Image (spheres, rainbow, N blue to C red):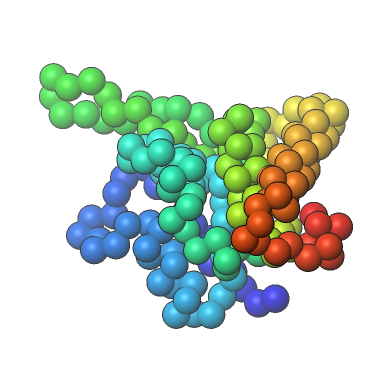
Length: 168
């Protein structure tokens, strides 16, 4: 596999953009012929930051292009606001915090809808918890993916290869 395009987390909407994030990611992966590295915490942070429902937002991404998945955590921060207005709360993807529940739910939904082999990476760049806590997060990620895969198998309109199930 060659290079993959990753969706990014942002604290502000790109100015003058004619496409939203799922449209742009679909267009760029199609034009470049590359797989997608889908960062679920980035997706979750952007959904929260810009008022989208995370699962509906996920469904708008080119899931058939996903080959690699990143999961991580973040923190809520307050951004500047206009005078007299309350601060603007944003979710920052910082890789310093545990993976939140909604990201595991997104991984489960992805497993249900994305039949291809997936490499899932737990990103952590600091504030490392005990090894047992990291292993618990990996076990939870495997369980979420397996639950989604099992649900996907029960969907009659979709075929998932046994190889894909054994490899994830």
